[in-house]
Image (cartoon, rainbow over all chains, first blue to last red; front, side, top):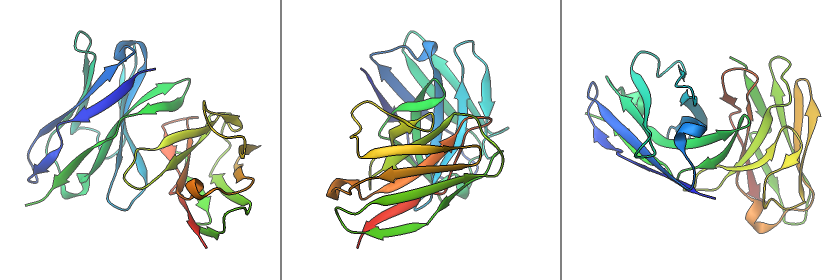
Length: 116
Length: 106
């Protein structure tokens, strides 16, 4: 059926940049709506961004203007470029495949810690 | 943005009991109302999609119902592995999640 594996998380300082990756196997990221969803420590789930098969991209409030979602089709990989990060961006970031408007596959997540 | 409010925040029950979790939307939403289960240290897992359809491999003790603004996830007889956090999510507009209901062992 396939899987998703995120990478690229780590400890960064406020104002810095970080790029998260999500490599898919068993299906093509370009054929599906792909999402980033995050979860702050001890908190609930928050949608960050998505990218459609035709390339349209959308962002939730906290990400707008600072984050960029993209994909590399030959590498079958989804990215999230995070710029000007803030302490409140600290979270586990999940990539998720959206099929018929539901998230039917999730990666294990990658942890981002923003701290000085 | 459509706000989803889940209740209760915490539900304490014993194995074998029936669990009823609620998700209320601030405005009418279409059939794209889904439920996810999350265990500590794990990614969420799709349980119920489009209000009442069980995802692949989900046991029959899980069921979903509702319409308009009020939705319910029911677990007919709790098994030890069912104790987790449950989130509802809507896709009528920008995706939003409820704040979660923690189902804990009494």
